[in-house]
Image 1 (cartoon, rainbow, N blue to C red):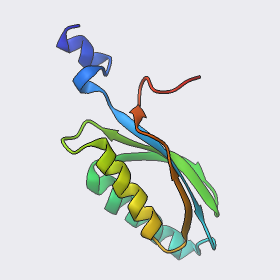
Image 2: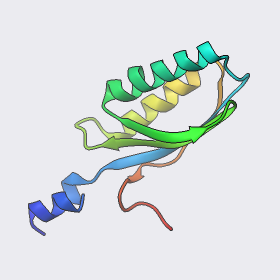
Image 3: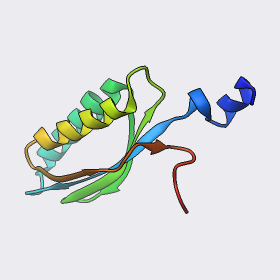
Image 4: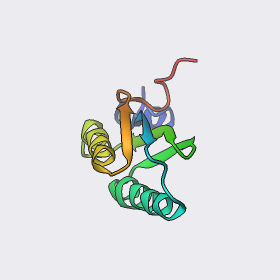
Length: 109
């Protein structure tokens, strides 16, 4: 397959990886703690590493997908960095992360 088509279809060297993440917040954060957590998580960790996060949840639990994309650093290193950061953050419990998978073709419907 030509490079142009591989790029268009996110195949080969253009594959983008992601992983699912789940965690609990115990005890639930106050409004100020919640703002501070999400600021440091999204701006400091996710955007700081060139990643993307999408997900949802409530006061006591969240789940989502972290897109690793195409980086020189391996997706496994990014995945472990996110897990380690969440485990070390006060108030975050039950951190679970799925395996790296193809963000475009790695889902079963």
